[in-house]
Image (tube, rainbow, N blue to C red; front, side):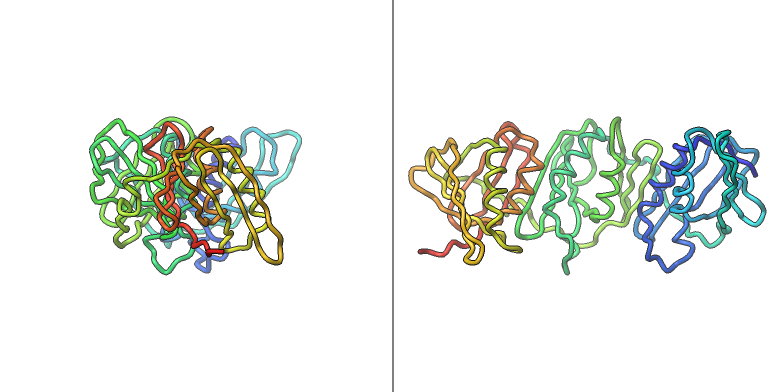
Length: 373
């Protein structure tokens, strides 16, 4: 079988599929991508038994064929070839011969392929009860909460992003590692069907964010799996089993003190203060007054810093809190706002951070105890 296809399109599609395959995979079949070739198009499929990806691209072939081949090596060869079309010839023994149509290179590259017989079946998107949302909207929502998810935990429910629709036409995404929480809610054009909510694994979310760009995308859920369709690429993943914590209980309903300040100015100040902190606590002290915020850090063997920035606050007396500077920076850098509002109740009460003008986006950080002098 002979296939003619654009080099860049093929390379890009292989890289999309191959991104979920681990180089440490001991299963030879799952180290490869599955290539389904027809006369008009090619499908490239990959899976690690947790996530499956299928992407489709136009091609011209003189027949139909299916085989598996190492995606990393395939893409590696294509990367070094000039732009334009390549000719891929697959023999009966699944040997893959690759040639460029460029007149500058006269060479033949051969990959060893295998039969598709041992490749596992991967279920994909069927569109039933699907929710549609703008790719840029969903990407922004996920990006704003990803930092708050736990990367390594014995509680799997914290190792993912929770998606829920608490009322029709509204979609909420939440992440928490029990010490901080981030949440974003946005309108969707059609009625969502997620009253119970689902937890999507972090690896899956990272793949989705990487795929999202412009246009619309669709997603749906069935039993223990979630399905996403982004352009010509479908993704399927297992969802995390377990009960996501009641995140509404963590969010303070009222704040005794509200302080508004310039986002960049606070970030710059916190970044300088972090020079004098140690991981993992990265502790800094924030002292809120009616018109100023004092940002302090002090570590015995490192030194100390003290910086004052202007704010607008309803504080009648000074309120001092300890906070993890890295957690604060993570929240601030993803808010995309010129100014932010910080809500406070007491020295050991959760700290709420919201971008000005966007009450449907917030972060909550648990404070660190401040020792009295």
